[in-house]
Length: 112
Image (cartoon, rainbow, N blue to C red):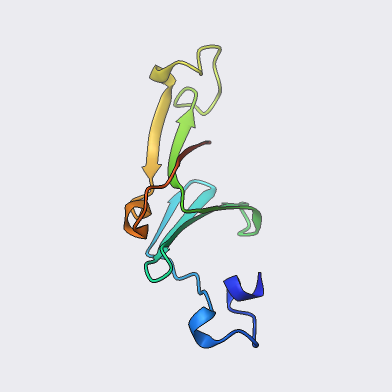
């Protein structure tokens, strides 16, 4: 963990990993940060839930995964009995850097 966050003082400089986002996107209370370390062939996405007073209440990390964020339900935000129908799924964000990691990566859908 310390090596990944750059907090390790014993790791050589070349082994340190710093999360420098290439893009940051806000989807209501969800904030998505995406970046890619091409030298290590690592693509990452952080999905954070932020409360109305600015406190991060949840963090999800995805490494070497192509992420699609989909909004479920009606436009009012409520889930209807037909929410599982494709007509009620709206893709609102897709990671764009996953192909730049230099390898094929699995896809994942995050429903909000």
